Amino acid sequence: LYTNRLFLSGLTTTEAGKLRNYFHFREPIQLQQKSLLFRASLDKSTQFLDTIDEDIPKGSWSIQYERGSGLIQIRSLKWLGMSFFHIPETNRYGSLYCGIGEENKDLPFMI
Image (cartoon, rainbow, N blue to C red; front, top):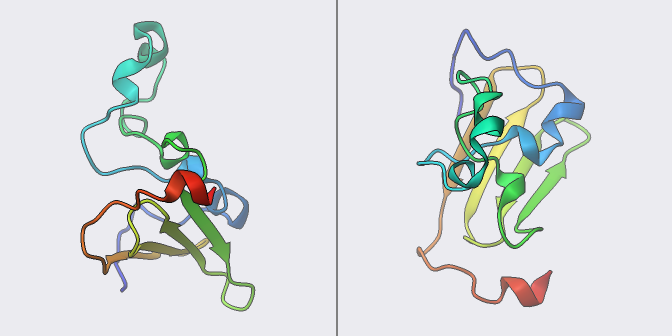
């Protein structure tokens, strides 16, 4: 999957390995629970969604780095079948969900 977006030059390898740089594409849940003072200090153009590192339970996302191609792959352990990839310092990224739409209720016992 290749998407050509001029505004995305890609994350650095270091930044691509941090879950705080990935966001949910949905109405924010965690953000609404933050104080007004904290929300006022956010950059409205980039910090308006929830990051995946704040998900409960902690550890519900798995991140792997492939040494040869440099590909970063992120998988959800809560929604089995959800996968995202990004090649650092490029505009190549994508996601795929191949699951049955059932939440992994065993996740707290797996972590």
